[in-house]
Length: 247
Image 1 (cartoon, rainbow, N blue to C red):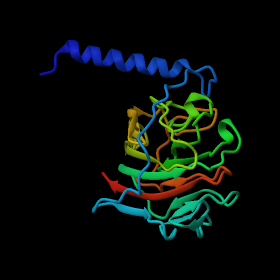
Image 2: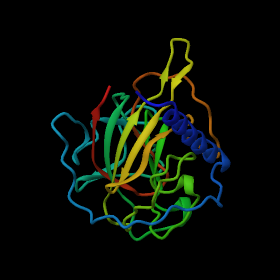
Image 3: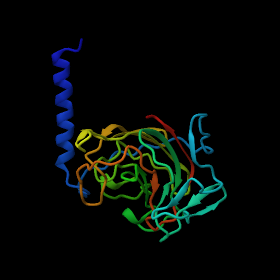
């Protein structure tokens, strides 16, 4: 049996966290930066487990399409896919809900630009909920839009970036939002995220879809939607993309 004291304490912690989240306006430049933690060295591409759905194995984009349909037009070579600027984002042909997603990515080297203009892309769960891809190695931007932030909502617990030109990993456990038959939110989306093997979000609760300079509310949507990767104009690279369905 769980004591009333423990339940009350847990509720108080949750309320305090929610209040702190609302303290900071979206993209507030004064929001504190998370501490820098140096991750271990990059390794070879992570092999998918036997029950994984392989979304990109370094050879082709057959599992992907353009954001408006049709073939994905990003460049595939040497075992990776590189954003082709102005061709649009790409998304999986299949939809997914609850999942464990593995993505490896590399920011351009030499680096170009600063702030949000440096190695910018994004990994979107259900084409709606973004984990930010950005080069924040010696490059500062607003905390809720830095590398591995749940964009516009939660900064990462730490800055675990490797240098540009080195492969980085995201491992994301995603729980989709639940809606009742009338479209009312029953439970919000949650994400646990590891960046380069370091925990940066621990079952973080999303306030709704991620957005630029806004925190829109939830709107009912399908139980399965595509994974998407963002074209933000920078030649960011991706490899070894796979997921395990958890529904």
